[in-house]
Image 1 (cartoon, one colour):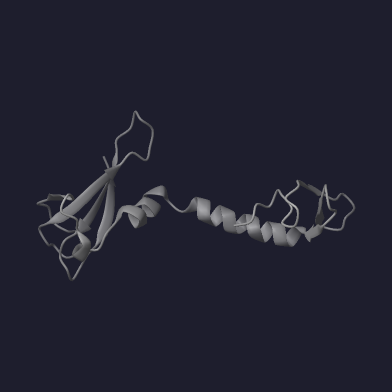
Image 2 (cartoon, one colour):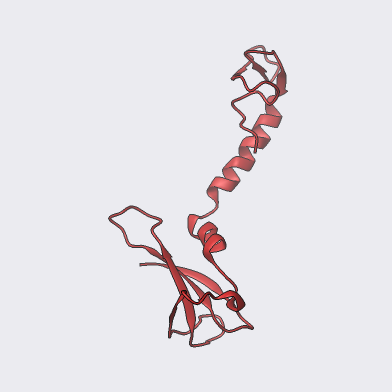
Length: 120
C-alpha cells in the first residue's frame, strides 16, 4: 500500500496546499494529488489496521484439519461448532507481557475445521 505522506513519483514528503484546491503537493517535484485520493488511501489503511489482531494471527497460524503437523499440540475438548472431541492448538502473546496469552484452536474433525481463539 502506498505511503500517503510521501510522493508516489519521487518519494519526497508531500505537503497540503492551502489554496482551497483540495490537493497535496510534493515538496521536491511539485507533483499534485487530490486530497480525495489521499483520503481514500487512508481509509483503506485504517480498515487494515482495525482488523483484530487475533483474527489476523488466526489466519496466519491457523491450519485446516488435514494439515495438522506432527508437533502440533492437541487437546481433548469439544468443538463449539460440531462437538468433535479433539482440537489442535497453538498460542501467541498478543497483549502486554503482564497479561495472558491467546490460544488458537482448530477442530480436528475433517468435515469441520472450525477455528477460534480464547484469551487466557
